[in-house]
Image 1 (cartoon, rainbow, N blue to C red):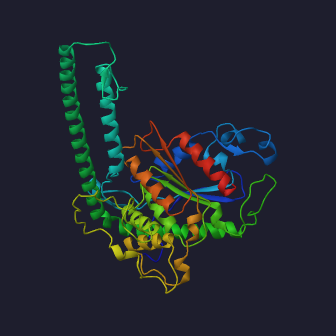
Image 2 (cartoon, rainbow, N blue to C red):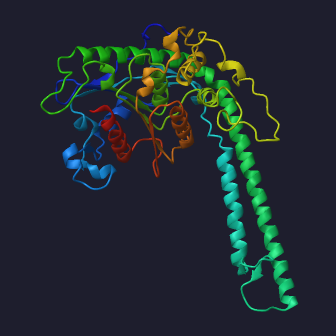
Length: 443
């Protein structure tokens, strides 16, 4: 584990508050290959609709829920929405990217190609839907009713035996055609499932490449959070003011938002989970994923089942009757038992999740004691995750998996997917992001 802030991190781009004094800090990480000029400039200049909660007296006079109890303001940017916030855009060091033929680019960690999510449950549902649709097509094609107790009968009047025989022959041929189509569809889905499963295994085998970079980036971010929290705690402005902009004077971390785009989201999300201090004011993730998600999901699901690895959830395994393929990288079944827990004290699922991530990142030995058994305070940080459905860099399913894993660990997560959006953010995403964070943090 890196114990000191890495010397080779370039200076971050710091944007001071539009209106002093400094009351909040927002730290946002760019994606791989980007920088302040290709990420931060556009982000801060993007206008979006902002909403403010109405005061209780006014809200009580309005019928309905949700946005009806908010007041809209003219288009804002992040700076004009948070005029007392300092924006920090760290710059990743340059390193050789394996997936780009070891080209030198700005990246928070090295890695491998991201595989799509493997979701046999959704595939089964889509297969069943396809069968039902084809059956409906059969009925419609031959004007067949379904009211007879003896089976299908034509909706028209009496028919000759020859006509009935001809109809049944056509019906049989039509069934055969659709059975073949359904068979081909199922075979194609099985092929995609096995292909995606293979890709996830290959990705898991290559995840070791991310460890050194993640260690350094997490250490860097933790030091940055401590520095900003100390500034906010020590600032005389960390109290309520005449413009009703408040800042918690007890915990400066509650006036800090961490987040990032793409790989910056993955790195900052790992830093959030390993933060050992008070909860932050919020987390903003855009088109990202959760590193070592399979291992973390296995721990969370095992905890929710009382240590059992059976049933639904966890690492997507085989169905009943299928042969289980040996996975040398799968976590041992007795991972949750004993180690790191004091006698008579049960470790929380959240603490187990943190321990699992530390082990994956070779973060050093988990501190023993009652403090490491309890639910980490950082899990009280509200998390927003937004993702473009048309994202061709990070599959949207990976973002959804991250949200489900974090939610299962007890973190308050808002997940949003945006149609027509690729590997970027949008004004609507910024609107949702700010609307989610503001009522929770009191900014």
